[in-house]
Amino acid sequence: MTSFGRVIGVFFSLVAFVGAASAETFVERPDLDALFKEQGTPGTFVLFDVAAETITVVNRARAEQRTVPASTFKVANSLIALETGAIKDEHEIIPYGGKPQPVKEWERDMGLRDAIRISNVPIYQEVARRIGPQRMQAMLERLDYGNHTIGTVVDRFWLDGPLQISPVEQAHFLARLAKRQLPLSARTQAIVRDIMRLDDMNGAILYGKTGWATSVSPNVGWLVGWVERGEKVDSFALNIDMAKVEEAPKRMTIVRGMLSRLGVI
Image 1 (cartoon, rainbow, N blue to C red):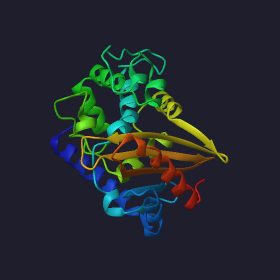
Image 2: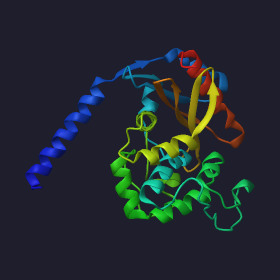
Image 3: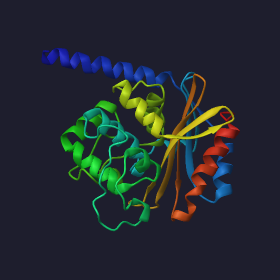
Image 4: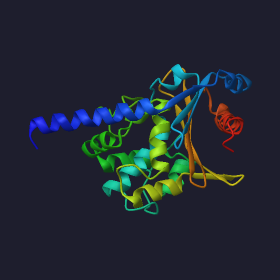
């Protein structure tokens, strides 16, 4: 392809992106900030109704602000590992490295299903090292994940930066996974969707992943995912100020409250 052709291709890609973004409707719900106040923490919540192209948001400025994804990046890390062949499947046993860990559960070798469930950091650091910086960088650009930036440390960039993503971007990314529309194989997307399944609620299925960003101040607690009811998909992203692990349950309490108040569950 000529340089002119590449420029034209980029131009039309940008036009398509802007057009898609402008088609979405933002609905701000300041009344739902009461759910954060009940839990004694500031935060933001984004709900993306994929079919209606409507984004319902609580605290929009924070919803559009990027920060490190922390363990929510395990979703993308799993996708990339499977797509590149760095990991064969969700059953392959991955070594954690043998060193003492801050969470005792992390001190064993395991596959992706268990590792994502208990958010095993050393397992996913090994996964990232197997992928390597060049493939990781290329895949983040392909997935259009956050600011696409991994820096020089391939096994820490989602914990310490420079990778950052906003709650609005998280909701868009997960909506594409929920609808099997990522530029990845059907097999890769099916496996990761399966290992993210959390709960069945009144005929709806909840998928999700938590995260706790301790490298930023104040610390940020994440819970991102989506709800499926038949063909209907609503993706979501929550982040809150979370100073200690004892506050972790607030994430699911707020998410369930938001989904209930918004008629999703």
